[in-house]
Image 1: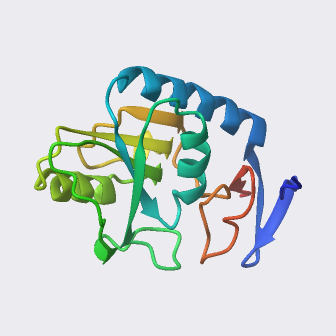
Image 2 (image 1 turned 30 degrees about the vertical axis):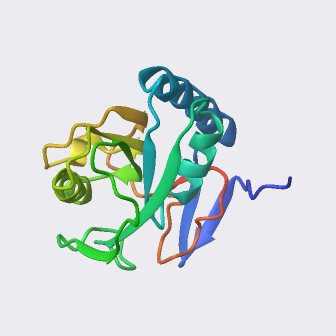
Amino acid sequence: MNQYLPDKVNINGEQFRVYLTEEEIQQRNKQLGQQISQDFKDKQPIFIGVLNGAFIFLADLMRYVTIPCEVDFLKLSSYGDEKVSSGQVHDLKNIDADIKGRHVILVEDIVDTGLSMNYLHKKLSQFAPDSLSIATMLHKHEATHHDVKIKYTGFKIPNLFVLGYGLDYAQEGRNLAQIYILEE
């Protein structure tokens, strides 16, 4: 399969360069999938992906999970087409699954301020899951202002603007197979 792997990209008039390669991302996905498979051995977790950004990470991660599992999606909005969060979270799509008594793994592309994950953790906890874990491909730990307990982190990164591998800038760049940072 041919993947979109340029060294640099120009999106919305701004230049981005490779930050994490496809090989680094897939190696980390494999490690996370093995850890999740071990942690949830003899259980059947349900992965809930946060659209739109997490769909690629979730798909790749699940390929490395070696236990029975299910998947569902929800969708939020807090960024719009901007590079920074609006500070408000809006539900755009709720999950369809009944998660009462289930082991839930909430899958996000990036945890920045923690606003969305804090919101979702509170919201999903109301449905009485047996457990609720968070998995994220990227965590901007320096930017996180909300108390968010992330169990599975792909990469901790500085407070940089990133795109690719599901992450977008005004809906562009999601199809890049690597993660890119804005060149200053």
